[in-house]
Amino acid sequence: MKIFRLDDLDAERAANEGAYLRFLKERHMSAGLYALSPGDTDTQQPHAQDEIYFVVSGRAYLTVGDETATVARGCVVHVPAGVPHRFHHITEELRVLVVFSPPEG
Image 1 (cartoon, helix red, strand yellow):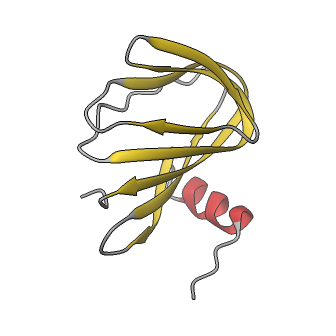
Image 2 (cartoon, helix red, strand yellow; image 1 turned 120 degrees about the vertical axis):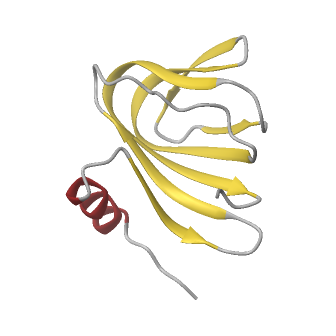
Image 3 (tube, one colour; image 1 turned 180 degrees about the horizontal axis):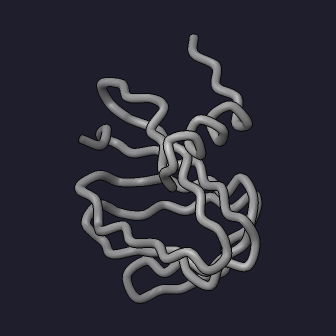
């Protein structure tokens, strides 16, 4: 069993001065913590893996393909592999748990 504490992951991510921290990589999936502040630009490109986003905190718009929705704490979103997507119009500090399957490179 592996247990991760969100506060510890966020501190490690911030110490590494990055928006994303991968904290788990297994044979069939990987997981990370993604953080964006109001005014930040989400520069991610489409991924080769399916993704699940779980919004831990914050509020923003998320565009996946040609669909846009508001996301906030408690939202769970599936992003299919290869589809362009990005968070934008971030109004509150955004923290998102990201699960990739298969695992990201």
